[in-house]
Image (cartoon, one colour):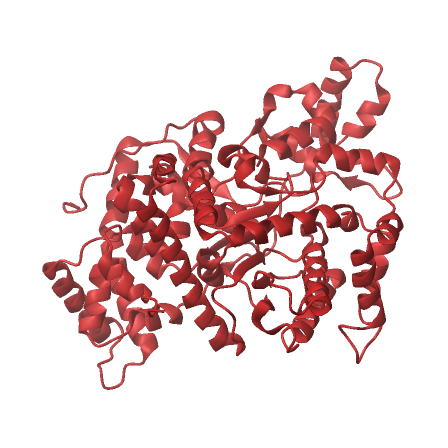
Length: 609
């Protein structure tokens, strides 16, 4: 098998990242040396790789400065409506490579750095992730800022930075005015007044922040259609009945600049060769790829890019974890915050089931599978910490069992962050989106995997519902209860013991966890997990276990047919355009903020007088 191209080699072949013109390269080298000497006060005798990184960062920044000043001039001249995006988190990730991509400078910078005798990948790895956050909300804010810039909105992101906050509070007055309106709309309904009050009465009075937020906002939206419907039908039903015009839906999205062009250059170019480059800022154009579903050359190109990404990530894993994996195995990935509702435990039960089947019939063919789970747990969340411990303990047993070999590998991806996501998502074959129906607001990782050519196994929850609609349910691996099924089960009463008694494979897995099979030195290590699953599992893992196992068997069956697998991948990529954050922000702008997006480029930043 041929050696996979490095990112640097790929960049030199592709057009979506700009051309490495001779003048560009020469100017960049001069700028690099100028910053090394006069900004950092270093020369090549004493400069460290970190100094070279900063010299390159300043060089790229120079190309932003003129544009920034011209943009500010435009704002002063035209005085457009400003948008201020408030978020506790802005999970920006690394910015150097992203900026080079957006400025179409990457090929020129690659060539300049190469001619200077330096390694671009080494310089990029020096940059730390800008981690002003730890989860989906922070990453969503970063994608939204990217789209606001793409759509020409005069937008700014603001966090919270204060030591002592002193605010005039008239919450009781606001509450009284609000309850007067409720009483006028629903005369005699005293219980409704209690339910909707901004102040929760009791031994200790508390402010209901969600109620305060709805009362003080002119628009309220969910972030996926199913989420918005749940808000209107259950959680905020009273508020919806009072002011139905306030409630909207804005399904979340992701920026294709970072989550395709930057992190998956091979796939970005294969797409550009067929439909041009305009899809980068108009992701709906990906639908043109539907005409290539039966194109053998395109099928081969998409499969080749995926295999190159898998080879590269396999090398990364071997270097980081000293674990050799089979790059031809199915890369089964679940990366997200560790939480009971996201059901990493259901994934664990499937892994153990696969392990038991291999041990029972060691000579039977199984589709090789490498399961990767990654994510952070909140510091005080004991169960999430135990789930991580369980994943690593399963890996310790499975990965060292000679009977299993490389047919099954289990890896916990430590320190999951944006820069690691940019490596694993392009390499994934299968995306695990398996939350209990009705618990995931939207999700954006699911969209990133879809755009990068992974197929989804998931419940009809969050944005999965709309993704399956776009791609067609036949191009998704859907399993498990729907939201209405969960509600019915809640009414009837969920009894884990019923499933334990009825399903032998499930019973075997739970007995292994109870007996210390995966923790021989501490046999009762996972007793809290077993107790939760058996007696007070709010997220009903056992109820979906059987259907999940059957659905995973369908995944393995399709993976045996690479051509059909890739055709399904192409259909998913082609129908992922709806999930661009450009679409999300355009809807916010028009329907809530009262601003019209613009694709009109500003004048070139040459005359700054």
